[in-house]
Length: 239
Image (cartoon, rainbow, N blue to C red):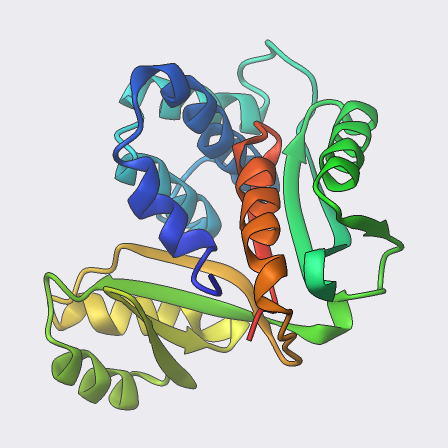
């Protein structure tokens, strides 16, 4: 359950049917728009954009969609509202803390719909700062253990400048300081270890252990939030 975040989502989304593919492309496209609007349209000089493009490619987003999103972000293409990044904080069943990252062109719609999902899923919307102190902002670089051995990845992680690592299922995750994400990812690439994703994210510094009876409703709530087109990632502090 605690692996239910960015890296787990990418692996799952590769197997989506056509009915959901457009919604997935919308999510990844908005990441690209935001990155391009902040740092320009050249991924060679805008690492956030490079990360966003790599993530979009991992779900087979067409090149035309990627190029269009970049142009929207830089202002070359004006065919929609401004995309804003917003973070919402909540408690799920069992008092599990949730950080809900969104990218939206209509914040009033998004906050209303996120609140509705939480209410129906036995969750609770809380003010900014109520749960975010339980998390730390980090860089997360993920590798498939189907491609590389854990021993190799552990050894290189120790040499890379990363702070830590952990394993979630078949995914190896190197944890970095925010300002070292790019240099550590480049270190691995020079060693011919190509990551599945490299992104900024959140890890819990305080964890929650809910009753077993709360786990199914918690999983359903997070899945429903993940399926919302404006929600990018849901982070939790489940132990």
